[in-house]
Image 1 (tube, helix red, strand yellow):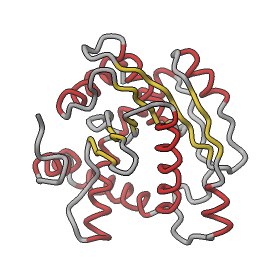
Image 2: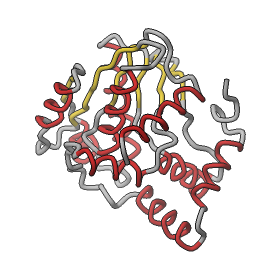
Image 3: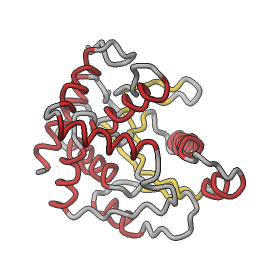
Length: 240
């Protein structure tokens, strides 16, 4: 996928759901994966011509596995002229050693987001951008249906009362396949996920299930996403 296509989809999301306001300071959560690096590129390029001026910074939460090198991401952010902060944490120790969680993803995500949101506030940000793409949104909907019995997925924009931060998801119209294409075309410096639970989660099961469903029923992903857009899920049904 070319940058022009990525920018078109991100701008559509920003305009449809009014994700960016004038003089926003937006923190981008950068895990080192393809999604967050693509989001960083998109927002930096959008910043150059968007009618509402906004500023950016990037934050990486180091989970404490001890074997991740973020130097390439540091260099990448310097090339984009985006301030970059690496936040050391002991999340890995808490989740895998202290708590010894059998289902570690929920606690890890909670601790990671808490650290990320706190760092964003400390850097003077009023918004934080998560790199969830369209496939993530559909998979979350299926997870909710299968394991919770409700039709739900996270919204394009959410206000966090306790943190006084707005979470935005500018990649909401971008498919994972398009992100992979963008990563390959522009040689993004992806940092491998060291988590021992990677590839062994309920989300991975649902990702595989969705792939099978789409192969057997071509277009099912598009129909699922249409159902989300029109299904009266909080934060989705009303667009200004």
